[in-house]
Length: 239
Image (cartoon, helix red, strand yellow):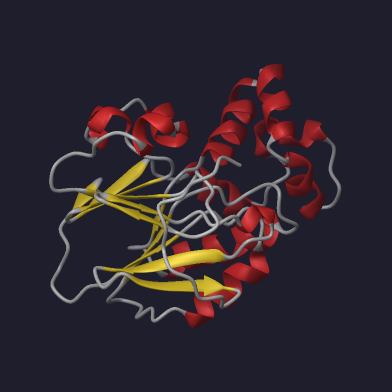
């Protein structure tokens, strides 16, 4: 599927922020969303694994969604990228990074496995492995760019190094966005969603006990699990 799709009339886009192993919040949010299979598109912004208690459950839900809905979009997060890089290269620095990112909770959800199981993704069922290997760096649909972290320096996503799409914060949050585009992103945690010119931030801290958030576009209708209601804000905090 190409990285740039048109937005058909009457189609709704439903973007979901960082999940981080919170399978129960994901189930609750999906059950509340006004999602019409075959008409609307689900877009997930990455960071499905680590920190929360049930990465296995999250990947089972998402891999099944990917099978049922080939138009659903699953972006890669920096947590998935670190795992895939370590599995491919085995660099001890990447293992130290994964431990800082909470990989132990991911391994525990598969049965308290040792870190050695990370090599070659051997601990994952085939469907979960295929799901992670198929993640996209970003997705453009109509006037929206869906990406895990953002676009540095006002560059279009096609011009950005892949690692910047997964890790940028300040250069994106305080900088411009390409004219005519709205960037929908996660990665930078805030107590409430961010809405600023050309930017919509959806990481409301599910990894840290906050809600899991979704937005329906172009209407800009918000959903949260648990169902707390709050207004978007421009205040951001680094996790």
